[in-house]
Figure (cartoon, rainbow, N blue to C red):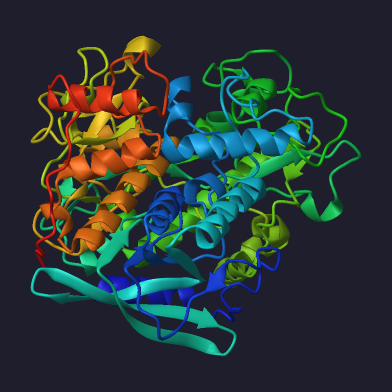
Length: 590
């Protein structure tokens, strides 16, 4: 392990009294705790939407999987970071693979409560879920994969990879450190495939995989280079009978000044019915409705109400972020404190300046053992935050990380290849389809863009029309394959892509679908006893089509999931008149 990774591990996890892996999740008894001596087909670092979907897909295809998560929450940006509104570029993304399954589960869950998932973005055409509900749905998928399939998923919470073992260019396994009540436990586990699905791409440097970060490459890091703004969100709800005393912020948090109030917060007004969250000024109605979510704690609201629960993830609490905030462990920790503080200041403004009866939601389960330990350290290092400790314990356990390290793969997807205005590039080896706009928070100036990859800066101050920004685009097989390292794959936000493309693939539906593609690659490589790079992409395409993923951007008249639907897509992909069958691949290629 590089010194910086070791330093980060010690810096963020020292002196933490931990529970056993699943002690805090007594309501999820079917999920198995990792066996200290077991080996697995696949190790997946990071239980966010990408890692989770890769695990479920691989288990469905017969693999044994260990899902490794450093917090005690699964679901990454969707649940653990509290980004509760699913960012769907178009409604068609709901018909795609594992995201379609998730969406249907969410709809059915809230239908039973007499509520709708369509509570965000000022309309009923987008999906939102409460974090605790989203997490429960993800666990249900894991439990079902364990009960019904030939594969198996185990989870190791409050764990992380601290060292990767390689034999030449081949990854052979990893050292896992898990914290328990009696202290840390270390295990050396072998695997056929290691997947980096962490929020920051932390396994890439450990595994010796070349990567990009910001506009830098791993052999030429400049810590001052800009990355996308990150945000420490907060799930907040209305307290119609008054905010409980422990959740009231009665004194200004450190750093709260009139200048900051005017610059960051005073744009939000109590009065008004504006529906543009970026208007100046805007209204609290716009802010709450923008990220509104169902409120299963309230029985007095219609299916599509004015929100009584939302999350704070707006321009006012976006935080300037650099490459150093990703690469340097001490700097990353300090940035986390800074992000929490900005959201705390915003919450104070809402309570004291706008007199809103809103505060952090006390029923999401965020005051978990992991989060309490993190906040205890924050308060120990910054005593001025002691009066706000209880509120901070109810913040999400991780920040919304929009941009991570990005693996350099056999193909790097660039902006011109996903342009919806000119028409996206057709990839014969497409294995996933995403549909969101190239949405970078901050860092869009030409000097922040990888001009060695992009033909010209594709983002300007004047955004093109909505229909020229969203719509389906394909991701090719080779964007998921490292340039030279074997036994390794990337999921989540760290696939091989430019910064601009990262802005379009970082959303929850996209990371679910891209993770599902990674799970298919890993499972097929293990089954065929070849390295991922040696797979015929057609095998992966067949697996994704069988999972209900539409891989072409052309409209199809045949019903979804039928043999004709699959054959028509294969014909489009391969430029043939009839379906194509995969070439046999039984010869091992280690």
